Length: 89
Image 1 (tube, helix red, strand yellow):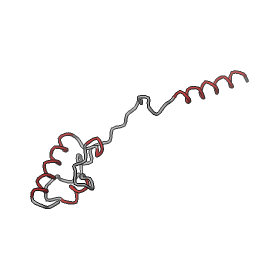
Image 2 (cartoon, rainbow, N blue to C red; image 1 turned 90 degrees about the vertical axis):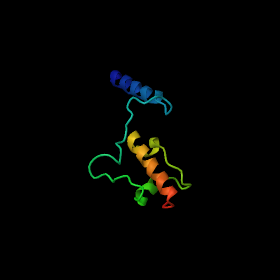
Image 3 (cartoon, rainbow, N blue to C red; image 1 turned 60 degrees about the vertical axis):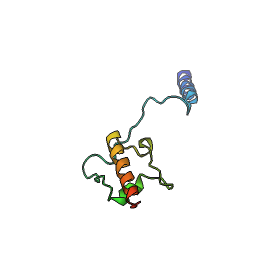
């Protein structure tokens, strides 16, 4: 019976050592929503898609928030800028 109590105490100590600010062992990376099958084509005329990737103030959201790949982020920002220039957004 004593061994079981010791194991429980050790488990409790391990959980108490965990912190929100420690580096996590496993970081989950989302897949790019604009890549793969059935993904929408990035185009300056597709205003609905472009509005998803802009903030309320009209700024382009960064890829760390939207989880878009670097290549698609460049295409996205270029098409957003074109749509702004043509007053579509």
